[in-house]
Structures are given as C-alpha cells and as structure tokens.
Length: 170
Ligand code: S3P
Image (cartoon, rainbow, N blue to C red; front, side, top):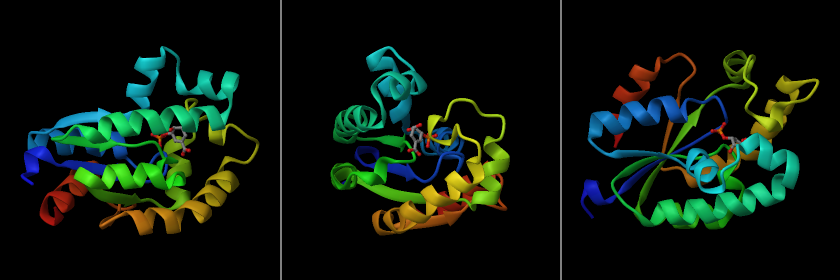
C-alpha cells in the first residue's frame, strides 16, 4: 500500500499533542488531517462535553466507535483520535487495517500543566484532575503500548521536534 493510501494514527492521552502534532505532520507529509472528536461533534451537532453530560460516557464511546470506523475506511490521512480510543479493541482493529499507529507518550505531570485551564475535557472535571489523569494513564498505558508500532515521548520536545522524529521513523 502506498503512503498516500495509508493512515497515520495518533493515539495517547488528552493533552499529549495529537491534534497539534497531527495538523503539522499532515502538512509536512501532504496528507489530510482528521480529528475524530471534531468529526463526531460535527456529525452529532453537539460538543463532546454536552454528549458526556446528557448521554454519559458509554453513549459517547458508542458514537466514537461509529466515527472511528468511518474515518478508518478512508486513506491518506493523519488521524488524531480521542484519548480513550484504545478502550475498545474494535477501534484499534479497524484503525490498523490502513494505519500506522503512533503513541504520543506524555508524563502525567506534563499533561496536568498543559490541561490546567482547559474546560473541554469532561473526564478530568473533578476535584483532583492530576490523580484522575494518573489513574487513566495507569489503565491505558498497556493498551497504548500494545496498539502502537511507534512510540515517542513528547515530554521534552516541542511539537515541531515531535514532527521531525516522526517523519524519520515513519
Ligand atoms: C477522552 C479524550 C478526549 C475526548 C473525550 C474522552 C478520553 O479527546 O475524546 O473527552 O477518554 O481520554 P482528546 O484526547 O483529544 O482530548
């Protein structure tokens, strides 16, 4: 399969830079950029926060699975996924068909700094977001590692540097 028919799929926690890096990487590699959260919001006509608040996380995961399936069928894209995409094995199965899966690892201490004034992540709207992030990462780390062919620690790198590393590795 030619690169223009494949997908480059970014996975990792919220705040790991999937969207920022993804947009830059897509430009660099002349591929389309797709963000599954954005696609979902556009399709449903509601924000992720609203979906969580009115229908709950299970319904969000069901909608996310539908969107992932649709996006994964197309090719020639850099796909930024939601942080919880690895929770459903089916998502990874479909993304892998045309995709190279890349895990952007970011330590919780770095994530918390990046997300401290962010209001758009319902899962960390709680009294102790750092603890919550650590808990989520503890559960998800093995899933991210199992799913990915490439892993990059983004902690000390600028988005530009992450893109450089990725272009080398892909
Ligand atoms: C989630 C991450 C979010 C979004 C939703 C759930 C998660 O995406 O899909 O709020 O479970 O980690 P980002 O990783 O783009 O923030």
